[in-house]
Length: 241
View 1 (cartoon, rainbow, N blue to C red):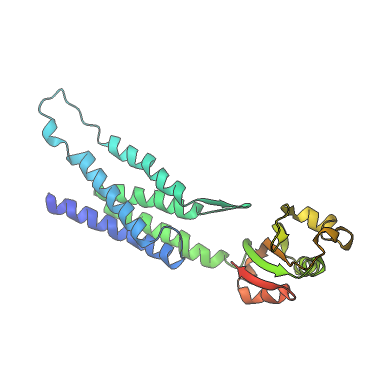
View 2: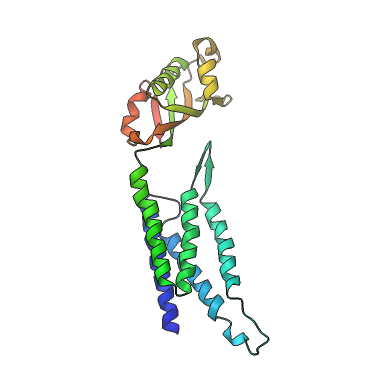
């Protein structure tokens, strides 16, 4: 029986590690080690829940609910999943990784219960979802890019916004401040209606450049950063990600 339990833990860790390798390849917050440990721990909890209290059943009056510890794993994995979710400006990141950890825990529980075929089939489906569908959809839809740069004046910033708009790129939000003296955060509406117009640029018209952080929504067809660089001509680009 002990060797059977060891086999269950090994299979759970292997299947969880396969999902973790895909997340590691994508440079996600939770990678190989996290998924490996989640699956292994879930399998161990399931084994302990189902078989660890056999000695306590000394009479017919005792009953053992083997699902109780498994249910706590489902609840507890939410804390780890929540740690991978990041709300940055208007974009929520890490949801897929959190969902991957959740289903990895389920795969671990299935392996711990000896349901190897179901656990393996679930792993294949998860990998198909994460990798195959990512390959299919990477040329469709949009994704967010954050660019930070120094603009010598408001006119340069307006030209950059105009170039982005002409290329069909949406400026979702941005922050604008002097390189030395901070000013209020701006929105896309401000950029298009007044504060970035020549008439509204007087309060920014001095020798200090503007440090601007733009969050833009880009088509996945423009997945290469090099395709975006010419659009920031005239500014000193600090970072783009």
